Length: 448
Image (tube, rainbow, N blue to C red; front, side):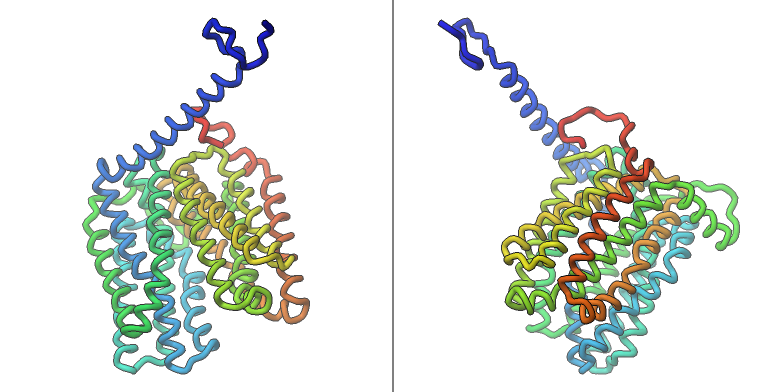
């Protein structure tokens, strides 16, 4: 009898060499996923300091997810209209750009958990004043915009202080787990928060929702103040300007950091123009109105959740490749809008975009935290935040006039092409292309 490939010879031997290998790969993959999940759970069980930090940040997020909707309706109730709302919303980013570099110096100079806690106190105080003004009917658009300036200044230190603090709380190889768990919790709050905010604003008014945001800041600060963490050991301190120059020097000396910061700036600007500004109007004109826009945002939120879970289970080595590949789903989403594809196709693309964006964010953040010098980390992170946000105001202001002159679909198509070109250009830089390529790894099947 002839023995065909894969048939049993009757001697207990399998003549298909791929089947055992396939089973081994599946077993290895399952074991690797189990290790990742066990490692994530162990952070909650074995690192109470990180748990306190995690809870402090998450409590704040629960307020921050509902506050924007409450603030928007508070401004509209004042008769501010879109122009007044734009004035209030742009005030924070303006001071954020100005203050960010100095905030990084402060976060490197002092204990980062105290810097973070103080920022939460400032934000809580501002939001408490905002809530009181709204509840008493004393709020005005100029006053709310002025309070936004203070919030923007305080918020500018949160990212460099928080991301710089995390390597002091967990081991280097656990940073991806910690960042992924943070994104999972943030995304869960982001899925339910806006819907809950709409119900609460309609039921009890925006003032009380803003009051909860203020309370969440204070609760967060109470947890962060008590973290048993000291300052990072540093050399001789110099003046603030000298330390600012030192941070810029580190930023410029690491080519991959600068290139990926510029790539992130491009991505943020294209998203601001194509999705934030043109997206709602596009939904009205081509997809049937606000309900369709809600579907797209829900798909995007679902993608964010899946991406954060994926980042917990998959540990990529080649961070530069991941950062460049993440531009492809964004380009696809912009291209789908430009091509006026049906809503289901755009929604699926939005979900994929959310997966890629969150996965890239965890990978990028963990790589920065693992590779940047600890004593200058907050300054470099603040510089990256500054570079990343520089083009956003330009995109927000120019998207409308460009769409009016050339057509929204033309602008969206140009944005999609720009995303592809930016990814290709970034990947052409050797330092980006090789980032993580030569790192040692455990060789698991869940590594890229």
